[in-house]
Image (cartoon, rainbow, N blue to C red; front, side, top):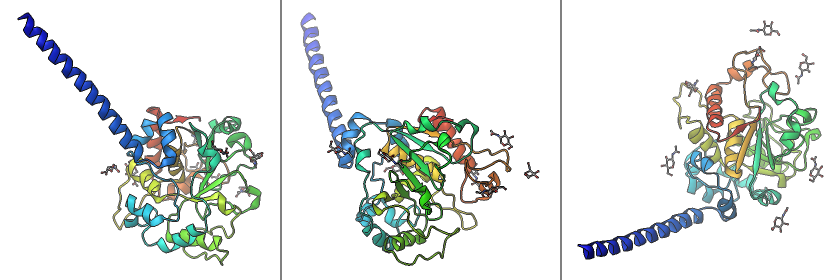
Length: 331
Ligand SMILES: *[C@@H]1O[C@H](CO)[C@@H](O)[C@H](O)[C@H]1NC(C)=O
Ligand SMILES: *[C@@H]1O[C@H](CO)[C@@H](O)[C@H](O)[C@H]1NC(C)=O
Ligand SMILES: *[C@@H]1O[C@H](CO)[C@@H](O)[C@H](O)[C@H]1NC(C)=O
Ligand SMILES: *[C@@H]1O[C@H](CO)[C@@H](O)[C@H](O)[C@H]1NC(C)=O
Ligand SMILES: *[C@@H]1O[C@H](CO)[C@@H](O)[C@H](O)[C@H]1NC(C)=O
Ligand SMILES: *[C@@H]1O[C@H](CO)[C@@H](O)[C@H](O)[C@H]1NC(C)=O
Ligand SMILES: *[C@@H]1O[C@H](CO)[C@@H](O)[C@H](O)[C@H]1NC(C)=O
């Protein structure tokens, strides 16, 4: 009886030791596997500053945020070659080739790569009373993301002086040298083949065609080529599908819904930051007469008429992110 117990204890001990060893080995195996599928640059950071929540929202996809010259390889791996802009590269490859050939860089700027745990703030465009005088707070972040032609000049007290990344497209990029900032990297969002054509024409100093735009695009580049990047369309797809849960295709009778620049900026931030805060993301949906942006005279009615966005879906999504403490709202 006693001996039987002793044998059983021995078995149990061996069993538990074996299970622990197996668990440990599997753990290392899984971790190794996850890390080895990441781009090399990200690996070091992944170990030290890993934001589980962002990876879950992005459906665990770790990708290069910007397009490089080997766009076909980049596109095939992500399935982008089977989708049209803005979610893929199909039917715009020729223009992408011409544009990307003339962009000297496609990675994160060195000084940003060197920051190990990046604390980011995304500054939205909606006008909000709460945003007044938080400029110095915004300037204290490692990475400051702004968008479109939302000016810094004259609004420093509210939006801060610094801009690390500025997300924009041909109709919304600054074209007046007054707004030039040598410390900004401009991230171009390409919504249609004409946008990519526009970029290639500007980079090759050709005559710029204004055909196919909903508003006159910039006719000159105030930025130097090394300051420009093209956002990977896969990030737009993630913003739409993984974040906002928009359908992939829309019936012919309905305008397709795309995320606003603000949501795309937050998605990009989930890729390159370890902590994301936002400021000025609240639209006043109750009054069509209220001012839309912190700058300019446009009213909320402009946004309400825009059938390509679903602002109420976006506002709910942001509210949820803040409630779940995935991001922090400064305003
Ligand atoms: C998440 O990724 C898996 C595997 O890559 C894929 O099958 C699934 O459709 C993705 N889900 C979403 C919502 O994109
Ligand atoms: C980034 O770090 C590398 C290696 O640590 C260093 O050589 C380089 O000068 C740094 N670059 C910047 C812009 O800080
Ligand atoms: C750009 O960065 C440099 C170095 O940090 C700084 O001295 C300069 O004032 C910045 N320029 C602008 C326009 O912010
Ligand atoms: C909107 O503003 C205009 C002029 O400022 C005013 O005449 C109109 O009554 C306002 N409408 C609403 C719904 O507040
Ligand atoms: C929305 O705009 C209306 C009219 O301009 C204003 O009375 C109201 O306070 C605003 N709401 C918010 C949340 O800012
Ligand atoms: C806004 O409206 C004012 C007065 O109506 C006008 O003087 C100003 O030029 C407008 N600003 C812009 C950016 O349109
Ligand atoms: C916008 O999104 C909300 C919430 O997902 C949905 O109920 C509504 O039907 C959408 N509106 C349009 C015009 O697609």
